[in-house]
Length: 488
Image (tube, rainbow, N blue to C red):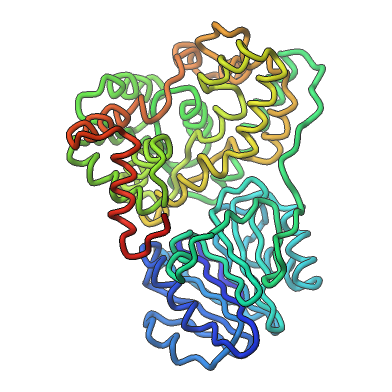
């Protein structure tokens, strides 16, 4: 069977000899229960099960190979339908996949060739945000999209191989060494490491002028937004009034689709007024939600548990996007567009100015490439893990593969002019203005989401109330949230 579901968690276990994988699989599923406990889909080499009762999983026959998917029940119109595929079984955690019909397109890929080769071909040719576990003939194979938009972790030794959508699944087995499954890789569980298929690599710098590059960039942005909105009747955009979310909102507003803007932040923060003014300027239907210091404290605990880290930047990014997803769900919207990925690709971060000042153009070029390559660790999987339990899909047009390749080929001088460049992202600003984004928004100064929403100041204030530095405060909460697992 193939399951094409969008909100849940993958688990897979391959044991050696006669060790039963089922009890281990149940632990993985339980540890990831916050991602959904409405439906459980389980397959072994000899049988399969779809149930809403987790206890039935324990009644499956002994097996040393098993995969599972636990999910939030699909909203109306998105039923969880298994598809028979000869002797193979697969679970697919997918938000967006560049196939005409995701489930059936995936089935075509998996049925055509041997499993590992089929997955390699999928990763090579298909854009999207997905992770897959595939069971065939007692062997388990796994794959992750080349940009790393869907989280996936693994562990392997001579006796055991495991994959899990989140680290806490692997931690629940008493294993601390949960490794990030590299984007664009395929793995046959039992082998030492995943095998590279397609990865982000440096691109040849374009010699075209700014006008031509701006035109190409604009066309790719329009294509990326339209593809991710295809077939959707209503979407939201996580909106700050900044360049990145504004150009996405502007392009969405030109499609035949109902669009809402979600604006979130701390009560009284001045960025609210700007975001609401920008939404009005773009003619957006905006939903606004302000939060208190107490709300931030609750969100810190929740987001640290979800993203499995105490890193201040990651927690600061996770909170407002979690709020945005929650607000979208409240207003009945299940797809939320973001501007994630633009800062890495087009030179938005302030740290790039330091790289340019201290190491020149080469240092800046390397810093941008490394940020794009590593964005799955710093940004994408953080956003996904923070928002998935809300039952909302986050879509990131700036992570389109072709757009990334173009962005890496753009001369850095068209992104950042000098170490004193307060605006940065020059070519993106030009492309946005060329696409019709109002100049007032296209030239708005950059401010990171944790600062523009007031989250950063609140975290620091809460830390001071405990007499701790920010890092120590968040580490303390991490230990409290994971006291039963103790991965630290």
